[in-house]
Amino acid sequence: MVSLQLGNRTVVITGAGQGQGAAEARLLAEAGARVIATDLAEVPPAGLAGLASSSSASLVYRQLDVSDASGWSNLAAWIQSEGWQVDGLVNNAGITQRSRLLDVSVADLQKVYEVNVAGSLLGIQSLSPLMGSGTSVVNVGSVAGLTAHYPVAYTASKWALRGLSQVAAMELGPHGIRVNTVHPGFIETPMTASAKPEFRQTTLAETPLGRTGSVEEVAAVVLFLLSPLSSFVTGAEIPVDGGQSAHGGAKSVSDALR
Image (tube, rainbow, N blue to C red):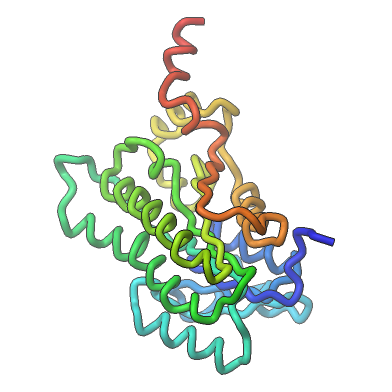
């Protein structure tokens, strides 16, 4: 019977130390997957420490800088040495940079690109040889990749990730590897906690559901895309944004005319 259970499957998650990544790691482990959770820290961050040390949970932690090609090569070699194949890859690691168009530097653009785009490319290049038919890649984009969001370096990186995802879906499809993208809106995470109050208020005003999202709500969509329930879904882009990107800015007009 097709289900959301991921028993006997190995899933790699980047940026799993906190926020969305930690929630994804917890949910996938609960669904029965062997989770290889990665992040920059040498030891499991607090959000994963208990799960990684629990004998009842199948989660292992590995240090990884997603922008480092040698780190990806080492991770792939280690997975092979354990005798595992990779059934799922979640490219969740990401950073932001909030400079506006006339203030952003090329160095800012490159720094964000190295993590948000190149990191995902390196993950796909390194781990797809360990993936077979019926496996899945989930790239974590952003509502910024669907709109003209003002932090230009972050926005440009997420638009670029969309292109990478579509090419990967096309090229890996013949191998039975699916590639999809989720686009979170305003999700309560450590990254969004530093946003200005004005940003929060205005974003909520533009969100039809009228609230922020939770990391668990993003993780649930990631689980679906990794599971057999989405076996004929590839090249898809799924906003998890409470409707923020759906109205194209028309909500403000609609609200003003009430």
